[in-house]
Length: 551
Image (cartoon, rainbow, N blue to C red; front, side, top):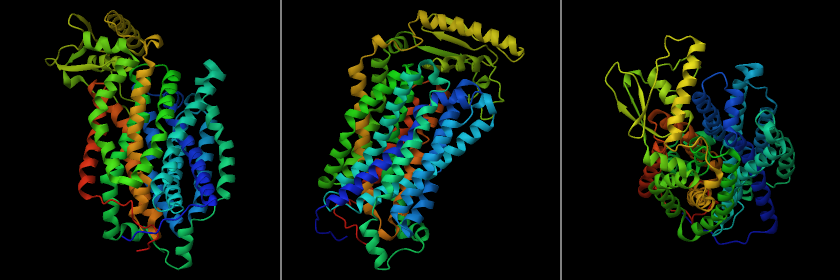
């Protein structure tokens, strides 16, 4: 591939790159609000099912937005390659802002029943479609404005927008929590969603000031544009091969490292370690604030030593250290639960035939066997436990440490009121044993080692910056101008939308199935290592490739 003569970026080009990045921040803010408020949303919109299922449902609705992102990439990528980058921007931001605001106005399950989660998921799908068209356009647009030798640095600004958008959403949520107090969980959570209307207005104004990409304009003037970017991108093996290489050798691993370091870390602290929501959000925000400049550092470094080396190194480092880091997070964020797990491990001894996987999509399954009752009670408390096989026909028993045990009960023959009473009695008895063994109901704020927790979260964010900082420039450089928007968007959004977006749901379900609070981490570890191996052997280095090519 030919190299181009370095050029100097003009003041006007810097302005449009800034405008593009700022609009993307707002779009990510809208998208991340839902993930940050998943626990509250599960109570508001999925209250018709049991608590474990409700939380998995809330994560699934979060993931639904990611599931459709590849389709948004195809739809808006085609428009962007045929009509232009600028006008596609305006459409995606309007869809995103409007669907986010509707979530803020949507009545909950108690008010309109099953219609509430259905409309909620529809809005998430619209958000996902919009975001699917957004990122490829922003990355392509900025890269096509960037001079040779600075492409990694300038596109890294787009990479910061996802983290800044998450940071902005966390800050707005914290302010709204402070202003509304106890009312936040009933109606105050709606305010951050409604604020997206203001951001929408600002974003539309900013995007209307943008100029079209000079490389795209030149291509159109020369009559070299694609009339069928979808067919060219995916119907011809020479391009489809590059799409698959980019997906399995770069974006799949990048995605799981990103979502583990930001979202799963937040879910883990609030759901498993029982850290107060506000405290957990502040800790994540601190890690993001310290770590975000590394997007620019690694983006700039990729201009000198190459994109591939940095991305794959990030994947390997993350895979090798995720489990130790999350164990350290437990130790420093909730030392009482760490010590209790070490000194008084919990075991569920039960007949495996009586144990169901506790996920009920339609809310009709009754988890009333002794095994299910024992496991669901422990799962709600975020208690780590191991499973042991008991002889068929024996009752399930929970052992706390070596001596204390609590027998479960069979609720199959009990009436609704009797079952609730027995469950309460069992919960009280088990809680007492866990408390005696040192298991806390909540993380004690006075016992949290804040500097160490922030250091761990910052390191997780730095892994994110390694894999994510150079990825935009890398993907843009892989594909020709005529089909660039379409071609780069699909592997990015399959990687981030499917491999990454489903991570919290898959990981939480893996934990619920095994009782091991760290077991869900094997999902990102496996994907990240697989990506590093594939990428090492099949991916080229692209940092010196010319963007102005149409073949």
